[in-house]
Length: 334
Image (cartoon, one colour):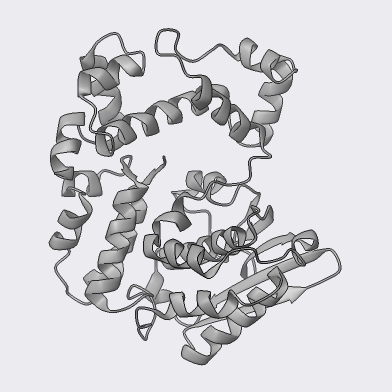
């Protein structure tokens, strides 16, 4: 269960628009209305974004989504995944995966640096102007990190992520994508992680990989980040014990649950760029979209489930989250 800013849906269509291809069928297939697409504060479900990306891949015949000078034929990523599935460790996987893409494209250059206590995955686009919103660059970092994490069955904890550009307007999404400090206007774009992950073994079977690729890129966008953070643990606790009759517990209850004090919880959440109210609001938003879009629950029932006194209050809140009313959101999905 997850949602992302509609910025990613808009940016995913940039390559299509540059090639003067009509985007309406792609949006209709993904269940994203133009109203949702254009609202800067709106959210889309990761299921919708996944369908949109698959549609762009198919329509352009390009896994790089028109964000590079030359196209990358569909199937390249799957072939790379099958190739590296025979590797023994994380180090070997990165090295062999980069070798594969060096053979098929000059548009994206990657480098894997090893040191005694650190690993760096560096990515450079030959022509950044083709990806002027940096959508595919960020997507590329995410899918490599999530794919490798999935292959070893352990979430790789990123220490830092570096970007060569200024902090973008959608940077509020980065704590959920990378869960680490971000460095902007850096000399290169890269993700950095500890060397303790370098020798971890590849554990996935060919059958598991086949199922994973069938769902791609959905799983690559929804595999959760490391659950070591306090915010992730609080979210998991709230989801597990949510009671419609009681709503979400007060911060004092959460602090006691984690054998801490409210002041300590506030401080730790602040260090992670979070606060308790924000966690609750985001959880309500994502539950609402999940119930309406995937589980087809009635609007009035969703309002009650989330503790709203009446459907009108829920409708106002939902429109703030997504840019449209719950009914319009569901109708567009249909």
